[in-house]
Image 1 (tube, one colour):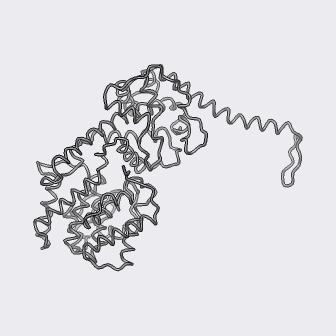
Image 2 (cartoon, helix red, strand yellow; image 1 turned 45 degrees about the vertical axis):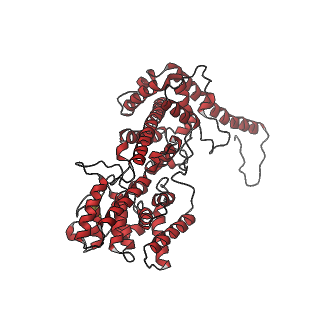
Image 3 (cartoon, helix red, strand yellow; image 1 turned 180 degrees about the vertical axis):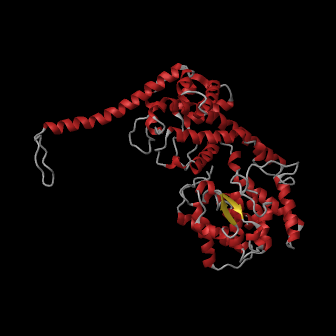
Length: 484
């Protein structure tokens, strides 16, 4: 199964983007000079290959657009061009389209007041698609990025496409604002259709009712492809995609493995909290029976199961990272995970890791349900390989602890771990209520890991001692050493 990000260099991304742009422009019967197409392709690709992009990448926008509809392809190419939380900024070339109508106030982006806005029908149309108003403060988690991305798309394509086509593209991008419930019985898709009707009338556009309904169907397809990993039949691939999101908003995890125990815990805790409260029924979209009920229900059911898998999986990892954080608390706040666990195998040849010292468990815990069996398999054998390369795909410490205490105890310890993270529990209190067999073995293994490092360093002490015992000679360019 294809993951959201595959290895793609900037040249390959640019060429694929240019190819899709050309195809979509041709299907939309627009006339665009090759030099202009090249400029737009570069505008799209530059932010998508930024240093923090691991999930929202060129491959992602190509997947979301599909390969059958020009409006969908075009919308997908632009839909993640602005992602402030990930990029920590807005690409300079992209900001050209944004700054005339937005400003920063108290570290938040805001649509300019009406008196500051230029007369711009395209901008007004995009603003109405998102149901925003002049002077509105943009919420990073409620459409900010999608609105700004749609604005860039509309303004960049304005010289070449009809207003009706720009409206359709903006509507498809609006639909990628994720995880929204119905309001007063009106679904997100129905609400979008209602706004399209109003905009079509207000701006005297020529979209028929059938075209507007089909536009919403396009938006539904885009939205569902954007989150389709929740419906992956393989939980290993679902988790691999989830792992690609971790370094996008936890930039410390990209520091070549030199992140701290706390850095890793914070990232896991944010992801576990998000997935624990996410409701399966708000992930996918449906409009007037499309997609059909059977497909929609299958996606929702699979998403619900994947969320249950992720919740237990992340809970086990949180319980064990809490144990490491408690053990390392006496050493300081900046203890690296590699110090406590050992280096990742692909970064240090023949490196010794913590799990090297774990004993075999004679009577390991046996999973009590299909869900437990799947989570145990993920912990022991690993997620599918993700592009972020943040950590190991498997979880040797969590696997070892589960073998001793089982999943019910891990659920209990996860709850206690959260109290520890909130500083409602001291490190010693957290450790004292953990299974003593586990804590004794883990402490012993940490000491052996430290001893292995000590012996490595001690080897250089022996080399130094041998050198000191040999007669000293003066080499050219080397200072003479004496005791005098």
